[in-house]
Every structure is written in C-alpha cells, then in structure tokens.
Length: 496
Image 1 (cartoon, rainbow, N blue to C red):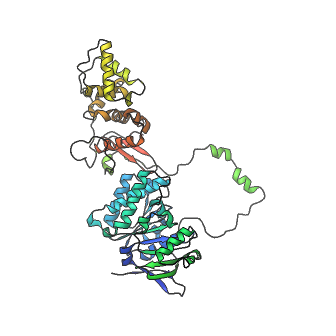
Image 2 (cartoon, rainbow, N blue to C red):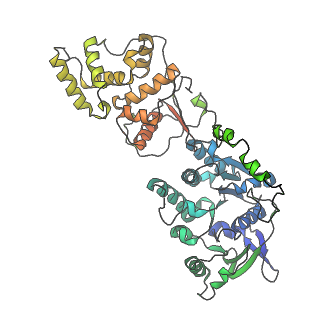
Image 3 (tube, rainbow, N blue to C red):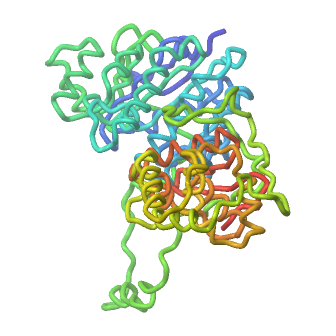
C-alpha cells in the first residue's frame, strides 16, 4: 500500500508529496529557526495523512490540541495524570491504535521531559501484538534529546535520551516512525538526528546549523547560503520519501490553527489619555493580596486504590523485597476493631528508656546496632533487666516510640500495631507514621518527616522507600506531574 501526502508546491507550482509508506520506514527530521514554519509543516503533514495512519504527537506547547476538533484526536492533558497512568495510557494508545496529542504545556520543563520519556518508553515497550504502524511526532525535539546536559539532572537526561534513541533507532521494527522537529541541529543529540533518512530544512542563520543542514542535504558550503534566504513556510527537502535530490517546497495551507497568539499586526486599543494607566492600576493592591490562582485543578484522588492503575515503576531497588512477585494490585490492610499487641507487654521502665533514646537529637540517623548498645548500657546503669529484648524487638519498640505510637490510646495503638505486623523493622517507622495519619484522619507526613523517620536526608531515598512500600501492597502513592503526591493505605479512607 502506498499513499502520497501533498505537503506543498515547488517554485514551478508542481506538487511535492511524501510517500507515507516510505516515511514509516525511514523517519523524518525537520529543522528551522523559530518562526520558520516548522509547526505549520507538521500540522500540514498530520492533516493530510489523518485517517490513514495512527498519529501520536508529543506537544510541549499545546499547539496541536486543535486536531481533536477536526480529526478526532484524543488530547491527553499530562498534568492531570500520575506517572503510572501516563505509562498505562501509552500502552492503551498502542493497543487501541488511537491518535492522540500528549499536551505537556501545563508542566514545568523538566516535568515535560520526564513525562514524554515515560510515554515514549511505554510506547516502545508495548507487546508485540500491538506493534501497529504509527507516526510519532515530537515537536521541539532539542528539549527531549539534548546534545548537552544543560540544567536537567543526569537521571532525567539519561531517561529522555534513551527514549528518543529507541524511537529513532529501534522504533521502526515496532511500527513507530519518528518525526522530530528542532529549532537548532546543534542542540539535538547526533545519534537521534543521524537516524532520520528524510529531511526538511527551513530557514536558519547560524553557520554551524547551516553547515550541518547542508551536509545532510548533500550541498556544498556555497549552496548552504540558500538556507539563510528561505522564507517562512519554505523548506528544502531530501530523502527516499520526498525526493532523491534536494527540492524546494512551499508548504500548503492547513485547516486547523494553533492556540498561539496572532502573528499579524492589529491596531492598539484606542483609549483616552490616562485611561490605560487607570486600567493597569485600578484596585491593584486588593488584587495582589488575593491568593495566587492555581495553575490547574489538582485531580481528585480515589480512596479505593483497587480502581487505580498499579503498575510499579522500574526504579533502582535499594529496599528489601518480600518473597515472590509483587501483587498487581495492593491488598487491603485490615484494621481490626480490637487486637492484642504482637509482643509481650514491655515493662514501663524499658519503654521509658527507649522513649528517652528516641527523643535524643539525630537518633534516627544512628545505626540500629549503636542505638541498641546505648539501650543496653542505660538499662545496666539503672538496674533494669533487658535481656529479653533482642535487637529486632528493640527496633520495633524504637519505631513505636519515634512515631509516638506508644503514647496514643491503647485501643488504636493495638489496631495499628496489628496492621503493621510483619513489616520490616528498617521501614517500620515511616510506615507507622503513614498508618497513624490514615487511621486518625490527619495529614500524611511530608517528604522531610518521612526522611527523618527513615534516617535519611536524601529525597531520592525517600521516594524509593515509598516505591518499596507500594510494591509490598502496604500503601498507594499517586503523584502527578504537577508535583502533588497523595499517599493512602488500602482499606483505610485517604487522609486529606
């Protein structure tokens, strides 16, 4: 099957087309400075082949969401979903062959990059039976495949480069045809740009970008000057899906428009002298005193975690795992109405010694063995028999003391202790804090408090702690790309 996409005309008025079947096999790179017409070209291409092939658009500016009105694309507002849901959505996009626009404009730059990387990786990792042909358009590709590290952290850069490299280098066998658009070739990772066999080069002025574009088009240095003289909407095309020799094309009209501001000149408002200043300063103090409007609405978190998507992320495993594979869905943790404490009742004197140690500064950051030696020494000094308290029981009692569980009413204490039975001692304190908040309806502990209870000042270790507890089915974590994290305990209504 072949299909010719009409993208515009050459200088003589002849139609310039793109062979869709060849494009699916050979990929496309679009380059041009801001204002050269890249987005217009991508829109023309998408409109012309809509309905013939599945289309997946990674849209950092929200320009392509208008395709939904005319062609039925599904718009995925990335800010409204958690990372787990983004991955599941990508899997379903491949399964059901849905044409979608992943709108990233409500996210910060690094969140956009991480979200796109997760989405692309999930597209790439789809099962073999879902390897249907699809065009994957990535606008502003220099963000997602940067040639240099820039300001993003190393983990994010590795993640996004891996996703983009897989798309361009190995995506063809999985039916994914990458179309990447960039403002500057010099900012785009070379191993991503090099995998494209088709090129559409728009206006650019920097020598390094002109030279790279000319090299890709097979032009000498003198001919490269043509790239500087291109008008808006004019591109030089080359490749097996376009032409075997460089050809100039003026991109045709489109039926939809982006959500950006007007490009042409419009008259300024006609106001009386002093009226504009009055409009700007009227009730300014009162307006500034109002709370800042939310950038977007925080999604409602479902209390029933069994309805939520629960696919564990692939993160470094630094926590102990339970035997056997993790459950696909969290199992409810029962909170009985009344239950006896799992251990024998400890003498009040021993509880007082452990509470004293828990209240010392930096206690949670000390090794458990050092804390246990301190406990034994204090007991000897006070003549308290402590031989029946081994290290494992001490760690459990210490977790009760550091979270304040030993100070609450006995009925609730027994229920929480029973629910935490079997949880490893090294993660017991933060889990008890979460369980207490869920049971008592108080706010969940934040990252800093969990880090203090866990004995770590590293935010990444706290995140891996939460991942570990989630894999064990002990908690449910919902974190959206807006930075909101909600923790709930299966079987217990989520705390606000």
